[in-house]
Image (cartoon, rainbow, N blue to C red):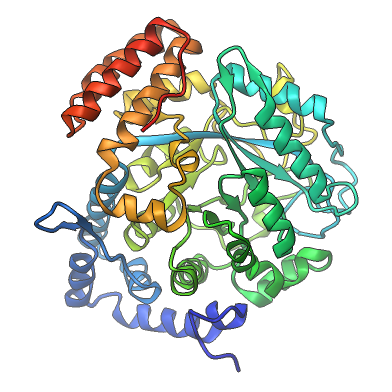
Amino acid sequence: MAIYDPKSHKADEFINHEEILETLRYADENKDNVELIDALLEKARPRRDENGKLHCVGLTHREASVLLACEIPEKIEKMYELAKEIKLEFYGNRIVMFAPLYISNYCINGCLYCPYHATNKTIKRKKLTQEEIRDEVIALQDMGHKRLAIEIGEDPRLNPIEYVLESIKTIYSIKHKNGAIRRVNVNIAATTVENYKKLVEAGIGTYILFQETYHREGYEELHPWGPKSDYCYHTESMDRAMEAGIDDVGLGVLFGLDKYRYEFAGLLMHAEHLEAAFGVGPHTISVPRVKPADDIDPTEFDNSMSEEMFLKLIALIRISVPYTGMIISTRESEATRGRALELGISQISGASRTSVGGYTEEERPVDTEQFDVSDQRTLDEVVSWLMDLKHIPSFCTACYRAGRTGDRFMSFCKSGQILNYCHPNALMTLAEYLVDYASPETKEKGMKMIEEELEKIPSDKVRKIAKENIEAIYNSDRRDFRF
C-alpha cells in the first residue's frame, strides 16, 4: 500500500487514496465542531506585519475539507466573507481576461466525457493550418484579446509537439493594427520533460493540464484506452513540467466526474505537493464542470453538485490556496460567474468559442465544439459588465515578460505590492482596450473607472507614471507600457 508523502514524485503517494478517505472521515466527524471551524477561519485570515507585508497561511486539504463538510449557515457566510477578504488583499478588484484558441480536435483517446474521443463519428474533425491560425488570432486581436490558451486534442501523429511549437511562433508573430497576443498559455496532453523544455524555449506562459478526476479507479474507468489512460503518467505531468523549467502550471479537475469532496481534497493535495516538492504551488486553479456537448450527456455523470456547493467550493479554494489565480470559463452562466468573481475567481474567459476555427465565423459553429458555451456575450459586453460590478478588466501580461513567474511571482504577490504593480498595469491595458476596441458606452464607463482607480495606487511615483502612460495611450499610438 502506498504511503502518503507530499514530497514524493509518485502519483499514488502525493495523491494518496487512503489519505483522502481518512480526510473525508475526519471532515464528517468535525463538520459540526464549531470551535475547530472558528479556529480554522481565524488561522486562514490574512494579516499584515509591522512592515506591511501580507501573511496568509491558507489551509491544508484536511482542514479545508472540514469547512466543505460544514453545513452551518452562519459559518458558511463567514467562509464567504473570508474568501472575499483574501481575494481583495491579493488580487484587488482586477479580473484578468483571456480566450481559448482551439487549433485541432483530432484525438486518439477514449475519454467518456469529451466529444473529441476517437470513436465519436458525429463530430466534425478539423486541424487549423498556420494561415488559419493567423486568421483566428487576428479575429481575437480585433476583439481586444492579449492572452490566449491553446487547446488541442491528443494525437501524436496529427498534433505533434512540432505543430504546437509552430503555432506558438505564428501567434507571437502577428501584429495587426494595435493588436498583439502578448502571452500564449498552453493546454496540451501530458508529455515528456524534453517536450516541456521545448515549450519553455517557445516562451509559453502557463502550462495547463486538468486532472479531470483524482480518483484513480474512476479515472481509469473514464479513460478506458489511449495515452491518457495512464493515470500516473498524467498525474505526474506537472512534476515533469517543473523539472523542465515551466514554473507556472495550472491545475484543475472536471467537477461532476467523481464525488466533489474527493476531488476537492485531491486538488488541494496536488497544490501542496507542488509547494513541498518544488517550493511553489500552482499558478492557477480552474473549476470547470461537466457540460453538454456533442455525443456527451452530462446527466450520465451522477456526481454533480448544487450551485451553492459549487460557489462554496470556489470560496474554499481561495481560502486554502490564497496566492493562486483562479479561473472560471464560459461553461458557466453570467449569473454564476458574477457570484464566483466575488468569492475568489481572478481570471475569466470572454467571448469564447470552443470550436476549431470558430472565431472567424460570424455565427458560433457547433459542429467542432468541445463543450456548450453558457455565457455567449461579446468581449465588449463582458468588459462592460465587469465594470458595472466594480471589477477592473485586465489584459495585463507584465509579470510573464518581466520574469515574475513561479516563486518570483509568489514572493512578489506575498509582499503586498499588487496595488503598485498589477493595479496600474491593469488600468493601462484597460486604457488600450477602451481606445482601440471598446464601444462608445464602454469607453465612457471605462475612462471614468480608470480616473477613479488611479487614485488607489499607494505610490505617488507609480501613480504619476501610470497617469502619464495612460494619457499617452489616449492621445497616441504608443502601447504596451508596464511596471
